[in-house]
Length: 351
Image (tube, rainbow, N blue to C red; front, side, top):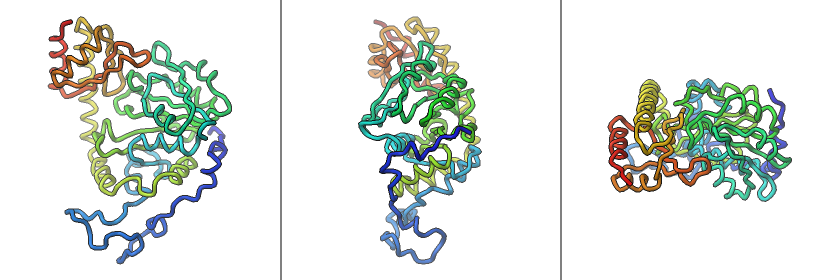
């Protein structure tokens, strides 16, 4: 395992931080009378009682995730979407106005937003033309104040998986934290990097229940890392960062893995059909290979087509102003009927 002292990467104020101790932290187990947390003792004005604070560490949910992912519960952080997991890393490890992080655009936009919110310098090393890592560029961008590198794989918005050996090269040679965002891993042929947690102390793997699991409205993000990093997460997070209702619904959903696997297969099948159908349309110049639940297509008159689709009630994502994605639309794989409606509408477009 890489020998990196996680404590040495922490901000000094976080090292000294005494976390808030909630009522549910001070007592664990079962009791007959709870008079410790100033809750409403009479109940909730709902069919289900939500008057008690939830488990601050979501142990039942983590134990269920553990059985699915093959990772011990103590190596799992569960947050309010992956966005919380991203933001907490900035707050714990990056000194405002001093430290920097590296991103590899085009990529997920929240890395940059979190950097800006936390006043952290952002260093952008563009992907190569084939949407793979510029390892030389990354190496040149690193200095003594570089705390994190973010890699999204499969990448959003390009859809491709990042070369595994290239990611391992970064992990082996960088002395800060490497965050691999696997929001779309369920749709990919690439193996998850969760399996490498025992090899790299500086590895954080992000996943989500928003995509393949169909729980975007619940906001359930997961970070998998060594226990030292998970301990940091639990130290700096809000005491009750995930509601009881969310924990219960997520647990219920995780019991339906067979249904999710069926949807994943259907999505991949529809992705292939959608890609072929788009390739047969004259204004579509290129459909990029995808390991995600969306495809990126380079299209003549992309801006005009986007507006045309909006007028007809079909919403895709216009990425035409994003670096390396000029004249591109990002299209989520829909149901067969949704995909058919999209293709038929594009065929009606004339300039």
